[in-house]
Amino acid sequence: MLFHRLISYLFHPLLCSFAGTFLYLLLSPEHIIKEQEYIILLVVFISTYLIPVLLLVLLKRLKLIEDYHLRSISERKFPILFFILLSFLIGRALVSIHIVDLLGFSFFGVAMALSFTYLLFNLKIKTSLHTLGIGGLIGFVILMSHTYQLNFNALLAGLFILAGLIGVSRLALNAHATKEIYIGFLLGLTAQFIIFQIYQNI
Image (cartoon, rainbow, N blue to C red; front, side, top):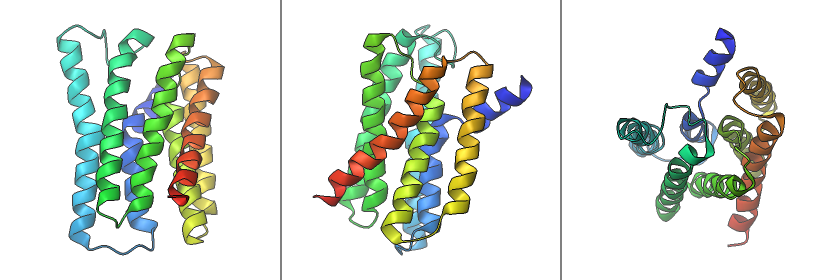
């Protein structure tokens, strides 16, 4: 059980956007100056990790959530809406500088996946955000590989193994039903592809 908790904490969904940004800046042949890379990494880390963590702390202090795991659908609604808006604004900011468009559109993919997650609340489906995050990261790496014609097979194999570990861990901790694990992964993955098609046609 300790192993499964460790996997869930180490590969928390809040870290996926930062991980995707880091991989993009590390592996992409698009060249920008180091200072710009550091600024982008810092902005993404603050926006997608620190701010959401502070929001959760505030919600818990106000007793609007019981704990940081957001176990119920009602507890998830506001944080999800907040992160949808945040992801959209980050994507828009990155696209506006015209040097990391692919990265910017990946954040639109996150916003789309989370929007569908919110809609599924109406069906009483609590989508796994852990598998949504790793699914989106895998989709983004696939798109980087396709766009830049680079071989990321070893990286993708590792990410798929990690996705399996995350899914098994969430099931072992009774955090989700099996269908919620699969729905999360498929939403994260396919949203990246859908947004990429839109990006190519602009």
